[in-house]
Image 1 (tube, rainbow, N blue to C red):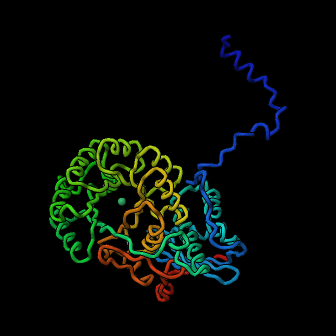
Image 2 (cartoon, rainbow, N blue to C red):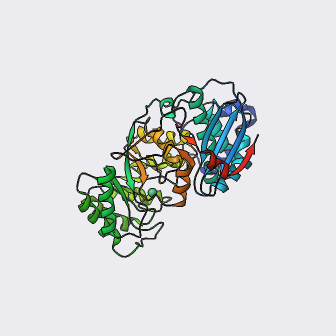
Length: 415
Ligand SMILES: [Mg+2]
């Protein structure tokens, strides 16, 4: 019998809701996963025994980069790093909005601490909350390593080893010929087996640094380096799909390994369209710090290669969830690490433990203020030898922060 819509609505209104308890209403409707990038088989990290309490959080900050030191009630110490770029803003957020989620808490439960911190700041999602959270997450991982007397990579089931690096150009003001000749020199002096070029311009609305540069750059560098070197390109959100697809044909002809951020990164449908139409893997995600957005990106095949940034995303715990999501769908994870702050160290430890990576990004433009500060901040320095970088060995991150750098930075404390 067909029931008229009006009668149906009337009937629905007469259902005695009061007779149902809250438990009846919700029985069978709970859904725990996926949530914050966890999946149904996700196991929370349990690296140390429960029983300690975080009692002090100290920060040492310069405008570009900042260090976090945490202390527990038994005097154990862990060092981490706030996300670089406007680290002074992130430090302010750390002390005002993040520290209270960690002081007095047991560091053993890192997944819960990190997730609670995001939920508690739900009015202020992502960027600065994640940037500040990174300082806490990475300090706790260092604390674990110091307590267990193991490098972080071993806590994750991997081992200290060399990781292949790709030489990453940061320049667009350079001619194709000059870019090609400095890459040939680096191939021969440092043994790089892969390089990344910059095409288009940052969020550039289809406009190149100068007309024709990208179309000339890719074949010029390919010819100079030869076929044995992996060649990658990054458009930093420059193109609309038609323009990205047109350039994509040139990338296909030059056997390019991946095309990074071809379209404005927030336009997932555009990026997925490009991924579908060209025969070059699409890479992306360095700016993405929402793990539900990551799930969408991966499930709709907007990216073939996931590139979380350990510092932008909120730390190692969250970056590992992206690597896991990518692995489950047969995708690679090649994180963003465009300079020599602790992001490189964190990423090296991560890559030593995950099964689905290929190389670490290593800037070949070492002269920025951020790189100068990064180089002055910790030791030993990371160096590329035979195209590879060794994961720092030693408890935790395996590096030491320099006393003079810490003393010259702005100091703050929460306890
Ligand atoms: Mg990029």
